[in-house]
Length: 328
Length: 261
Image 1: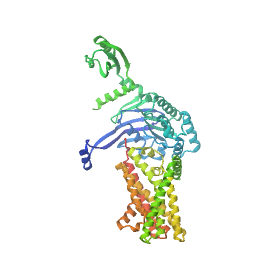
Image 2: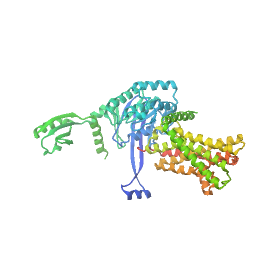
Image 3: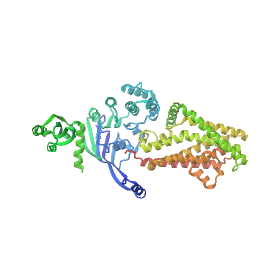
Image 4: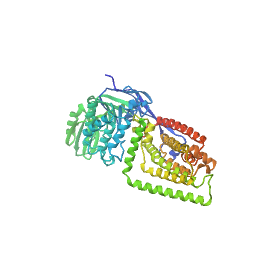
């Protein structure tokens, strides 16, 4: 099968002006600016097959948004190549733009004072959609997201989650084949996140669309993405099945207990994750879990001992921790 | 053709939007009335001292005022709001949405906003022009009508190009909001025909900020002063400015990277 998105050694560097805090430094900056080279994306490569939903993960500033912007043609790569549906995104050809969409959870494009329906009409004009097709798609999405009573209200009167539903409908009216979703569930409550998630899954299924999704909510990733691509400091760390990621990096378990006296040195048992009053949380290598717990019970007077598998958030965190040591 | 349809769609949305704010309509009428009153008082003050100003008599200057009010309405309804939104979006990084659409980006950013109530100024300007024309008691030839309308269109395009170039500098300087105030100040000079100003200011208002072409030249057409030479000059300058503005916009776009990148 031919891949729909193909990225090879893609890099984006910025020259960022740099100065120290304070008035003097600011004044000096007027005369002579020092620049620092920031490698926002540093030679990453991956391919995505048609119909795949791929989670694009990394901490803030990892280069996710920069990559998405390069893929949607907003930024020119410093080096490397990108090919999406056979197009070079940076050329921003209309034939390309017609087949993609970009949704950013922290920004909105709908007219604030108007009902979403009016903004949808604008999308129709922008994409020159035939009226029948447009109406069918619009009504289909409205029904899927159950928002028929909301599309007539001015967008400003909607809640954050309702507004996001409208944004997504607006962004998909032209039935794009490629979806770049940057934090589409940002700031939404759990129920709303689920609705958006299932809608994306449904869209992917119905139209065989390819989705590249970034999210800080691992629930989004777990529910939607079989495969994840992890980047950090602009470099690619992991590309493969989500389950393999967990397998590979979840080498730890979390041991929690309540302690009577604080005298003991806890670091001999494992990494101290947190001490909250008398409650202590340790991170312990998987294979040492039983040894550590029995030692804890012998050595100290502990209560309420619990052993849990590391949550996926922590798995991701440990991926970044491991890589930081490897990179630096 | 697609561009026109897009513009009409945005126009429709703009009108819909404005109808939600009825108060703006009344405020606009009040503003227009005050501007008209102060303009007329100024004109009467000048003509209580003299019968002529730089070769223009009272009713001819009334025609200039009419064009001034009308063009002001065009600028504030269709040009300035789009450019102010563009500045805002460049600053906040929201321009991304416009740039991922399969439409000419310059066209798209130039038609998205429309302040319908400013049309009050356009109508008022037309009425003032009508009164001025009836006072002048001149025969109006087809040529002066054509000259007038073409001069209005060219003038508006030139003002638009000026705004687009200034706004595009936001790609590098990010904060250019003060420009709007600066423009208002300079545009106010268009209340009088540019021939009454000293040379340096006249050239400035002609070639730097094309107020002369936006107001004085259409008024020349109304008052039978427009020469073919001026008209051709206006045409050439319109084409030149448009080419420059478009090139500059594309140049700016290339350096655009998104505020939060």
